[in-house]
Length: 361
Image (cartoon, rainbow, N blue to C red; front, side):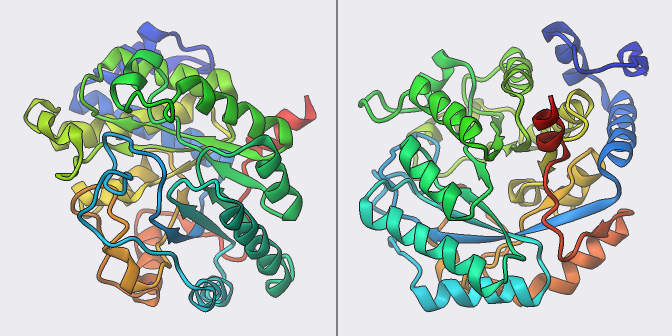
């Protein structure tokens, strides 16, 4: 066991400490995961909170070099879910007692899109009698748009930085004036200042990425004082420019294990935040999300997007559950959560304890 795991306070782990933990061998990794689970149970309990994920649209103005729905990819059909289909998904979440939903989309800043999301937020609050929590994951927007959505009733926002090192960020995005690290970081600050529970995250195993980058990513999230995190392994997509580096990547198993370590270390550093067990984990290992829960994650995002759209929201290869209807996995998910020793927090927003703790300061 690493002597670092005997520390009383993990908040101030430095870069070298984190690198040491990321390089733990298989046996010591078990100790790391066990320690993270202990911390998770102490600060966040044994509940796993569901966020019903609605992939509202795959229309995106961004052209990120790693993403399957990038604007430059012409090899799939663009869609936007119709109003009745959207609200059918919302009613499904209410009926199945999911505490919250996530509205996710490609990045779109048109007035029509902004107004539609505002309308949706208000109507969700209305039809659920304010019982359904709302997380948004809709990319970079203006301060005014974020404020508009917050005032309408959204209270959590996930904007993944994807990579917190500015120079590496440049390598992963086209230099066309539409992909700027400083602009994205400023969006995170705006979200926090408005009052959202702030979420971000990164991909693990990207081309050009190093263990040192990953350590810096964790320090970035700690220093930003985030309330929730969604991070997962990078899985390449053949219709992206970065696919040319597929033979130079860390093996999938290594990306998977590094993600478990990243989740565990972040749980040690920030014990009261929410951490999602992402679907990308399941794309590598059939028990991937459950293993992430055991490493310190406490949120699952079951996909409740209508089945007919799922094949067109492929951010990466081998995305699981694209051939299932939302109700196919209800009992399955509950059983899988209980199988690894936790309980589903039905009818509960499952807000980040960290958010309320920092608000007290």
